[in-house]
Length: 271
Image (cartoon, rainbow, N blue to C red):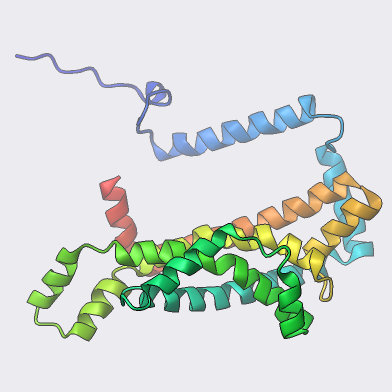
């Protein structure tokens, strides 16, 4: 009779490739690395980096003298508007990619993610003239190619067996498309939006610094860095942008889990 292999302890699984650990231990690893990072920052950070106390203390003058809350609200509103339009445009383009005639359009737009809008911004300024429209358009220009790339890959990767199975149920072609290409990928599409949301918050600093009308954290960050060189305030603004983006990321993830619980259950079983 073959010997029964000894079961590895939870602690040894921490150092084993593809190891599986309980949920409480997984959260503990995040806490551990966070504490190590805080300790490094407090003890070994470069001299040019401000301390945590300096960063926290810089929020008060930013709020009182530089309208931090108003600029934050402007950034959030601009991000939500740009993401809403980008999701609509990218979804239409991605679903058109199932038709061979329109597939080259989706392919070309997906390759636009390699082209920066720096140098082309004047075209938006000449064509649109309204600062608010220019801001939104520049963000859309930066977000849509990434969304189209992810969404098109999701739609075109659907197994043909899913279509054949749906047709065996005597569904019309419209219902086949609805169940396989709409309901069947809705969770994945929302996940693609969550992943590409980062592009909006990376780009928004550049957009708001370039088109200053309307304010925003990007404009404020540019002014603090170039005019006052107060790096405690720079870090404070960057942390606020980071925390806002993480908040949206978590909200979309929770919404996805609430709307499509079975999709997440299937992913956990296949993991």
